[in-house]
Image 1: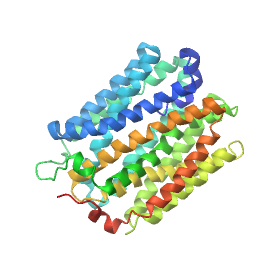
Image 2: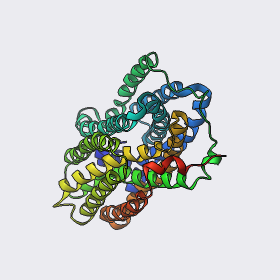
Image 3: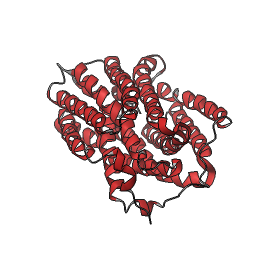
Image 4: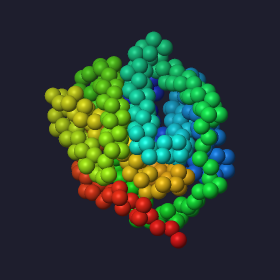
Length: 370
């Protein structure tokens, strides 16, 4: 997903796509991630968390390999969907594994987990445009499947050391029961709108700067700069939140940083590019793990906590999947991305208001199941 942005012009030249069509290459994985979270929850009941993650890594590797065969726009779609489903399975299953293994240190470990995701995005956005100059954009995208294979080997080895949580002694809640909880929808909408900011940055930061006259490589480095800061934020803010009885001050800080970044990117993209992306890296980098941490605060049971996180992500990713295509439409209609960044700034002001409700000490009492 992060590799697509720096290759926008090369892909458009070879496949003849509009920015709206290109946005689907980010929208489809996020949409698949949303739907896949629900499927993952059902699969975990049947085959267990370990097998779900194994299947997911295989799906990502095979989907990336499709780029080697050059199927044009159809192949791009298929690869995006397959990788999105694989990512969904992992992101729905791993929080339960982390909660089981880490216990009270869950926020810190979640920070490492999310920082690793964003670190991968930083590598992809920096390396892919350089590699594509030598082997073409199709092969440059396909090469990332080799990392999925490496991840698969590591995961199979890990299974013998750290068992996944068992569902035998845990409470299992149907989605219909969860959907009747107002707090569930608050968490899902909060996660979805926050992730919308992340997916838009992933998809449209490089094209934004290319539109301002930057080279493809420079635009890729801008995304790498942003995601490198996200990695540091993803490690720092969850550790800070773990040491506090109330996570809301940390949550407010990352949201304020995000609002400032979006406003600068929308109003002064040429003069404030590096400052805006730095602020967004700090804000979005901290918000992503914190959104999952405040979700998992609502239950001490690893499986129930994992179910809640999976469904929050499922609804959230469906919401977030609309953001890149909306930004692509704005670009096609108005000729720039500035309006989209300003719109996200307003949305994040709304998230500030929502965040005031997430009192950690009262979180377990907000979900009621009969």
